[in-house]
Amino acid sequence: MLATKNRLGILDAFGLQEGSEVRLLPNLRAGTAVFKFERG
Image (cartoon, rainbow, N blue to C red; front, top):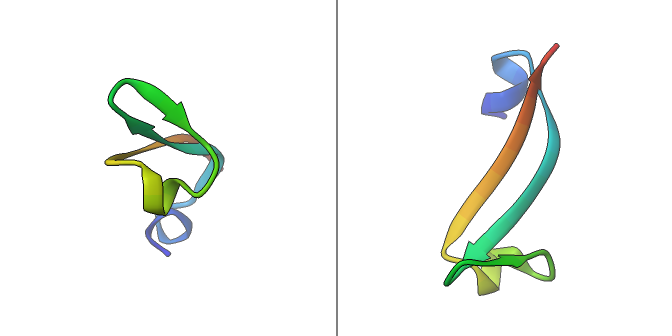
């Protein structure tokens, strides 16, 4: 995984669709992915 290769930990991940946060099945229901990283 790219994050692991670059020593990044994923703190949170969710999707956005039309300005709304999507956490239930974001791969199917969202057009944009949002990730919060920390360097480890």
